Amino acid sequence: QVQLVESGGGVVQPGRSLRLSCAASGFTFSRNAMHWVRQAPGRGPEWVAVISDDGSSKYYVDSVKGRFTIFRDNSKNTLYLQMNSLGAEDTGVYYCAKCWDCGRASYYAGAFDIWGQGSMVTVPS
Amino acid sequence: DIQMTQSPSSLSASVGDRVTITCRTGQNIRTHLNWYQQKAGKGPNLLIKTASTLESGVPPRFSGSGSGTDFTLTISGLQPEDFATYYCQQSYITPITFGQGTRLEI
Image (cartoon, rainbow over all chains, first blue to last red):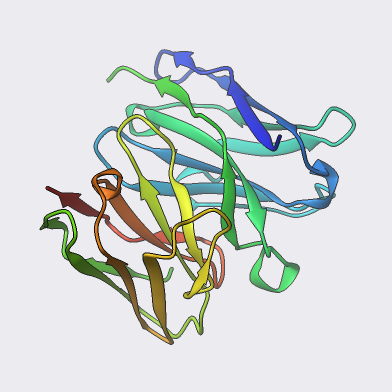
């Protein structure tokens, strides 16, 4: 069964850090680029970051550059998102997503065919 | 960044109706356009990829069309479980961008 399970969310004070994890199973994790997508309350999804299958390439949305780091451990089939200097604007549900048809030419853009259940991050204003 | 304009933002329909949702992009993305359904409290679910390819397990009443900058999602014969929010997403290049969503209500 193909599955992504996020963990690590919670309530964190402004300026502090949090690390999300995403455990993958049921597919060959090391052969797939992976993404983080977030969704603020009452808003649509917002793409956050992508990492290539081997971890050598990473891209971020401008609003998190320099604060968030995406990385992966293929030996553990796990994706991570390290979030530093958090602000109220980072509040939302964070999803990890498996990428379909992601390639280097598109900077690993693709469709998201498998999503995790989401992990809530709350940063009080 | 590629701008996404989705319309309408909300839509009222009845079971059995045929509805169409439109997505327009700010530049030519060929057919790198995907559609998702999201129900309350759940993550998005991929319905259509590359503009017109039905994802495995998705009922054939869902269909997608378009290329370049103009795309449509059509649901023929609405079922009660189809009342949800729908999003388009471009996968032409990062940063990946989504439409604002269409809330389909009874």
